[in-house]
Length: 228
Image (cartoon, rainbow, N blue to C red):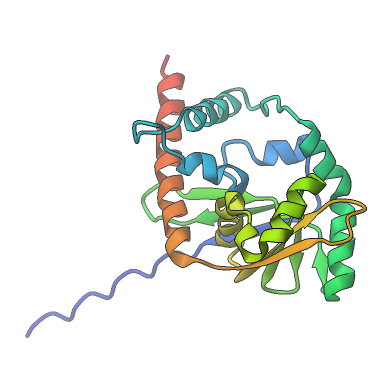
């Protein structure tokens, strides 16, 4: 009698943790992110250099993350005027969105996704969305100088800020949600730009592959350093 085929082992399920009791930008928030590739860095992780290899910014990011892991201390971060402006206006933009869409908005500090991989080390990724909306959407807020907003507004759909694609699709990957609203805001402007972004599974697969490679290289770098 032929033996019955062995049933495949069920694939371990990912674990998504929503951490809402930590304020973004605080020391505790920075510590939560140590050693974890986050959506804000996915574009850098995917970037290639002029020769087709890894970019200089990717290498610098890996070195910075390795240093954080070794020292268990968040790296010093530079905050330019645009970043400070974004932090200052974020609450106003979130309030605008809530009034405009009558949506149930929840602030969140950090979202961490653990991808279970059996015998292999788990892959952990994260993101810090500006809010979770209802049950299946995410809010991401950017601020831009008025002259740049006007340029986007005049261009209509062609003005979509593609430079944020990796972060937005990466946030959908990490959170497991279906869509994201990207809002571009500046205090006093007579209009606010808003773009609905749906999940792009093919592009998310590219992000996942790049992040997995980056995480493997980071782990090997950390291991080599610890052997010194």
